[in-house]
Image (cartoon, rainbow, N blue to C red):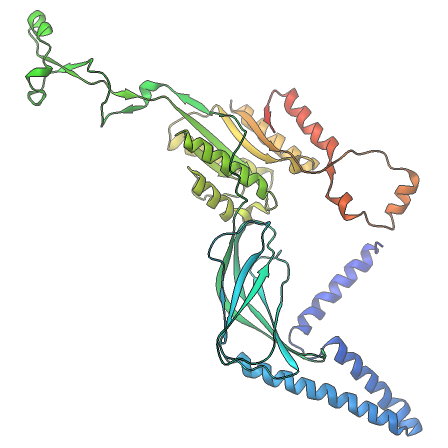
Length: 442
């Protein structure tokens, strides 16, 4: 059931301070409830009716809570002064669809009976699913405890520290502290072995502009003035007999026409599948020995990529900046690629490949921003070419009935319905591209 917005905002304001207080208070909800019961007994039945049973029960509850707090706090204060735990991250990057397994390495430590140590990781960035491992008992040797984490998207997830909490098995007391750890878990886009996209060259350089002046492997038809180092065999004697000038033959410069592809990947943090497709396309272009320049959303002055490895690293490094982008930031990221082509490669871009997630264009505001970017490219004489990753789930919208509208005020939509995207907005984007004669590859 849906709660009114006022109630939700009130709960959020109250839960924040309470959560920060609970981080250092040894009391738990269970012990607080027991203390309230003891307080009721001590202020009600005990003084008014001199109830011995109520008095024994009240003082017994207070003693149990007090003993649990002393046991937990004393043990936590002792462990807090020791560096008994360290972190071993995964050796290789994992994808967002896999569990990232880290290993907590515990030195010999004694955990008292009736208590346990709960360990979890805290990251500099939010979004990771909470994962806690519980450690019981004592050990005279080193212990290695695996901890599986589910991280939602690509990026270098920096670990701020290990959160350690000592609790008793009854849940009456707790003692929490943070062990600082500087480590990171690398989440890479999913690997895609092949791509069905065709070669989309941004410009074509004629062969006479791509010469190999160091190693001249062409046919010996190039005539140049004679130099003593050329030797007698290279002299053109017929030309010398007619003009009296010594000329010699040299191999002509070899010429190889090359394609040049410029790519901008418009990928938000949740668009990891799109990133995998973009990296696969860059890999296929490099296998054809083509020049590639890749920029992305959120690049913000980072070095552009010229191969698949650099492309993957750029998409990982820029993910946090891509989380908060605007219409102008898309233009800035594209302008960085165009400036690189003009200044470094000395080429004029005629076509620009844009990788876009299909789920993104189902949102009206996002679709308008991408259309604005394409129109901006058109004003500069550059043709945008969209490589659109088709969304997995599309929902054909229909006019809901009065009963469904009424139920929607009280009942939240199911998870399966919320995951579906609007097919009408998706078709509207494709129609606008067709009307403006923009190429789209799905």
